[in-house]
Length: 358
Image (cartoon, rainbow, N blue to C red):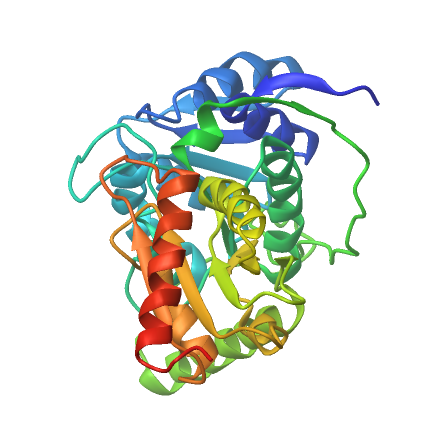
């Protein structure tokens, strides 16, 4: 299939439809407005349903209903809107309802700005709602990955019966790149015999619920969910290793920031500095094992469009074996390749002065 030039937000929408999404419930907020705009135009053409809800809270509860009926369903928003959806997301996680939630991140906290950001890492990876639950989180770095990850997210959601998040900084949503909608490997999925599709007199009614009044029963449910999350951690980690084989300073970055960092690596290697990159493609499960495969690394530098959130997982991953440094821009500001390269040189000089790098 030939590649076509698409804006990221529209590519998200087309990919969702290609994945079998028939229902979309959302509410406008910059910088993801092209997603619902695209879905409102295209879903009716295939017999699907688009609803602009009265609020983000209403939208996520409509998602709950459609998912409970066994439909492939999606919602999208940007940071403050995703915050409003968190109660509904934890309800869906508790009721084991598959759905896809797209967050095209902007600056915060609060209403913040409409500029690109990565400041929703904690909200995405720790679960912004209440209770013991996790959601798989994909982080595309290109519009092609935006397409591929949305399609995969629907299969993962159905396979594990869980909400799945795609966290893209606002630049991914707004940039245009050529994309290909290629045939992707599909998982073997179980029939949705748990869905509330009407009994037709053939079975007992199914009940979709996340309320457990007896603590013993809720504990067993939480243990069941935890077992599922451990399976996801075992099977669904995705990561890119870029020039890490001989790298003495290893960057950790995701999304658009990782693309900027690759330019910084080129700058540093021209200066004789061996630099590489670990790029998490899944923010949860986080690629902890990747940090065991950087044999020449002397120090790490995490780069984010935030005040520093993923850096905590990097520190957990390296277990104190190497120093971890951070460089970030916030509020919708993006770092430049030269800024990052300059920070890397400073880090190496500091480590050399203190005996950290030999």
